[in-house]
Image (cartoon, rainbow, N blue to C red; front, side, top):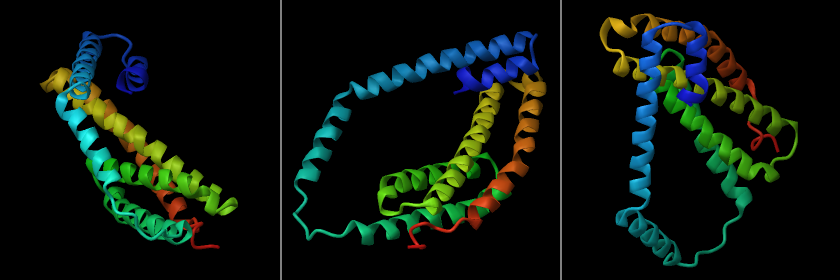
Length: 196
């Protein structure tokens, strides 16, 4: 995301400067290193063993009494929504890690909503889903700015990256009122699994 979306914005704000070139080179190098680490991990014996053990554990589960999805879905969604509510309170005045935890919680809620969507047709689900998706998108942009700040601090230590770090902090501050508004809108949405 940094190379594809955040760096072009930085280049628009800072069209000249050796620092941006060094940051770009550092980010590309980190990307290559991380992809290689992922490739090695996926080709490892440990990963293959983990997949086999997981499949064996699933196959070894006892046949249980079938449960109704209509009963399970609201409990699952209530749990996800409660987690979002708790993390939203922390993230509203919190830092980048708190906002990232909230983003992950929204993502889990959104995926659960999409999975259970056939059980809850109607405008209520659509509005709730759109609100959650908008929040997740904004939280993603805020996370991208936080990652850019971390990369900048690593690639351009000390005063070398100070102007860029200040610009990134300003971009984050500019988005925080929008986050507050979107959180407020989301909390006004009726939970579609409770309105049936």
